[in-house]
Image 1 (cartoon, protein in one colour):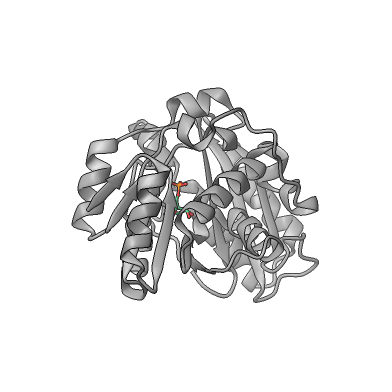
Image 2 (tube, rainbow, N blue to C red):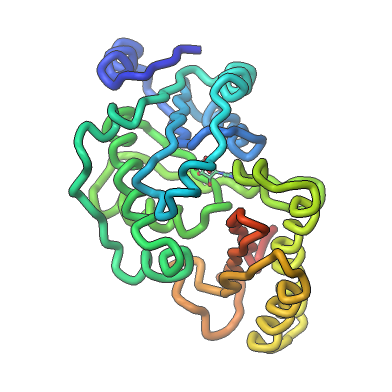
Length: 279
Ligand code: AMP
């Protein structure tokens, strides 16, 4: 496995390889089985897989979240090597942002709703770093997780608007045994919080079941809010349902509806989602 910290040597390496199919898996490190499922998918479909490991300051609206974000470089390298990843790109902040960036992205309503309401500037920072990575690696296919559903929609728009010549793949959410969506932030949960964190997925499943039974959306929302109100150190930020195409609030629930949730468990903010037509 080749490890690059600088852009020019990585580009030279990729040029020399001149392989027909390069898969890119952008991550912020602190890797888990969710990330590795993206590597696995890329390996199946490409001759070369590049994983970027970069905690992107531009997408953190909360400085404490950036400071506390887990960084586990050595175990990450071992996991990537074992997974058969070919190339790791792990730049310093100064390499990706030579000067403070003045470029911002505006995705209209798409980056103002849901996560955007609680994390202003977040998706602009995501779009900025993902654009840089696409330019540097020039992948054939880039792999992202459904776990960050809104992020995927933003990147879809970015690719379409800026005419990046690549295919995007959205991969399913990998979960712990109790349903909690795997996340680097789960490492920050203490034992009790870790147990309670499963409430996000349990609530999504309960909501889906009630909606499939024909329960009114307003009543379902109340059930989910009550679930969270019952636990003092959990704070629900939103539970919403939206159209999978444009993420606009759905008038009625259909196969094209996605249920989305965000909540604080102690100090840790977690998100999850569930498609009405699948897991
Ligand atoms: P992150 O390191 O959190 O920025 O995530 C890097 C990529 O892994 C993103 O495309 C995420 O959506 C994806 N990812 C994170 N958690 C999971 C998971 N539990 N299952 C599948 N993909 C995930």
